[in-house]
Amino acid sequence: MTQKASKNRKSAKGLKSSSPCYGCASECCQYFAVYIDEPTDLDEYDAVKWYIYHRKVSVYIDKEEDWYVHIEVPCRELDRHGKCRSYEGRPMVCRNYKPTACERADIDVKNIAEFDSVQELDDFFKLNYRVIGTDLKRRRRKYRTA
Ligand code: SF4
Ligand code: SF4
Image (cartoon, rainbow, N blue to C red):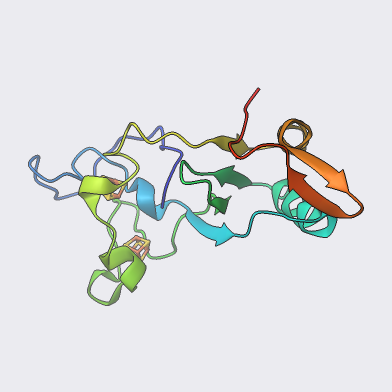
């Protein structure tokens, strides 16, 4: 629940216009993102490439420099009106998600980098890492982007 707004702005049925979710096509239920460790050697880098080779999968580094794999698949519990079929029993990650701080509300959130292709990942790595044996070392404390 972080990035990539849907182009479909149809509102979930039944929401009041005063709701912070009004006009949103339940964007936070259209994907999930999982934290991953920053790659520190060539094997881990290879695993990140493997994620990105899959359709509907990307990897990004958020503004806190945390790495995530992003899978663009809607939740099975989302109905065609944009409502949760399991609202009463929804998981804690959904309950704790605040519409006042979601990706739609927090429009200033900018990720440091997003990798939709292996080429983008390779370019970023050349700029920011050097290879020592099989290990990866950051060239500088802060990431650079092209
Ligand atoms: S369980 Fe419900 S609230 Fe949670 S992601 Fe799925 S549809 Fe959305
Ligand atoms: S929490 Fe944010 S992304 Fe999720 S439905 Fe509400 S406004 Fe949309």
